[in-house]
Image (cartoon, rainbow, N blue to C red; front, side, top):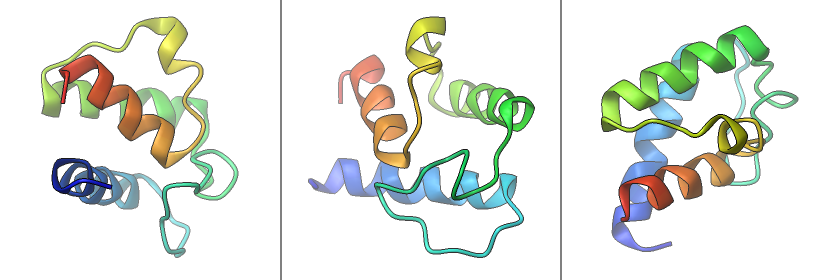
Length: 82
């Protein structure tokens, strides 16, 4: 993981911690729904917060494919061209 990706991962972990009540270590392969107990409504709120923070917009088909923390970071990098 390069420095920019690592920084983004840390920022995303902070956002995820604010949206979950599960006390678990967040790794790149952590499943957002299953491991962090984030349901579809919370995921929608999460995506909106990330879109606002990074000034991006997730294409609907891409947002529906995000399942792990790494896939979320990768999607943000792709959209922001990091």
